[in-house]
Length: 592
Image (tube, rainbow, N blue to C red; front, side, top):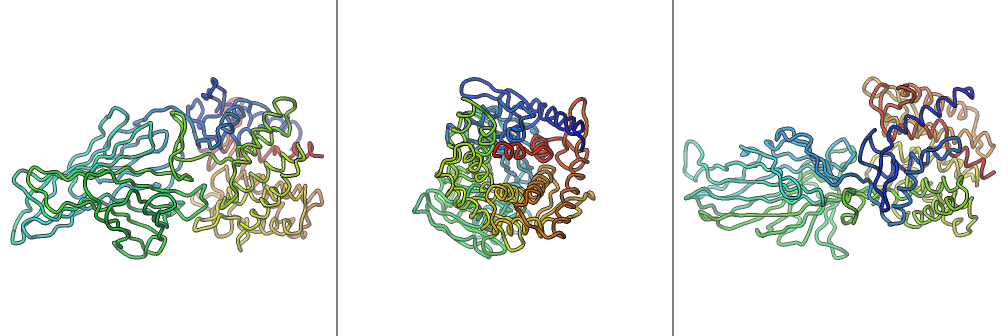
């Protein structure tokens, strides 16, 4: 690519990224940071870190506001994954197809079918939690009944409350006596109400069963359930937890139907994923009375593949005019044991990956002089200290390693050397038999993990070459191939794992492949000629596929988030810029 073409590409992509700039609230005012959408009002911390790192190249600029945002969050310790307005947005109030967003979650579903799908912000695919699958049990005139709640729903509504909204479905439960014939008799009203608030990530569920006049029910059981809890694509709960803190009892989700795992009262219980702690989904349910908890049951097709979680609340007799009410608080988090203490409007359900913040600040510190550079070094060091490598995913280990290396270039601090060696060793230990870098546990390999790990090791090979690193890099490259996904669309993919269908992933792979090429060109990485030709082919293919997703809009170049022609995204824009004009090229010159 000629110098003028490269200049046009660099400037066009930077202008495309500037379209995402919007005022973000900081403790001492506002700063122009990068929103999740042009003219948006929600700011993802990791996306701002990626954008800031991509703009660290001396020929670029415009990341000052994002850096100020990262510095303000680094000073507070654990930062929320995103920040935005402290409000509930009811995007669709139709009970059959509602859609509601809070700072902490997104809710979709069909109340008339008793389905409430709960997602973490910005996440697609299967819901992280499906509130559904409820039963009601009772005995009337000697006959036992066990009925699906969804079959009894007759009305549904979205009701405003003082602090949010309430999702309601209710209906009439019918049954027959032991010797009855003909039509069933209406026996009781059953109501499920889910209260959602902007100022809390908790969902408060209240179940009310009230017999109709003249009706008395025996052995009554109302339930609260979660269904489809191992739907795949990143949703797979494997461990059940009963109790709180160190005294909590943890058991694998059983293989079987309606397996009773707990009986009697419990302060809290829930489920969590078996994966890297920083990425694991966790559900905590806290019974709040007044009905006593009878039992907790679980169903699944195999051990550690939870499908259905059912809690039963009981009353031995419910006379006419009486009511059975069960209430519980449900908290869905990712990477946290408890909701994050955060400002209003901040996402309290997930913490920002501190390693990517450290990497962005350290990269800018490497190129910034004077007081600004000192502030960036301090912020990067603070973020790196906060990073816990125990059980961390490969991408987080890689970003921490690159941050530590950048800080070491600046300061020469001796204590960083063993930290870098430990991070590099942990990263290489995360490489599996197929050559793919993947977190421990049942989670599938991800392109983000693999590409970021490959990038970090290639960069380290330039500074501190070793045979072990070289072997890991070569195996990592060998694990990348071509694939065709629905569309049809040609993409790069990992061996036996996810394809790089998203532009962000494609660009990450290109950046990693170019870093490997740079290590080989500098004679720090020996590679047989056949492997070198394959590496060049993969890098050229990735470049061609990425360029096909870049289109002009006015004086800007916009990067499609997926297949060519799809809408743009900040993540795709930043990743493409970093791949085509890598900030590490400037960092290497500084180190030299």
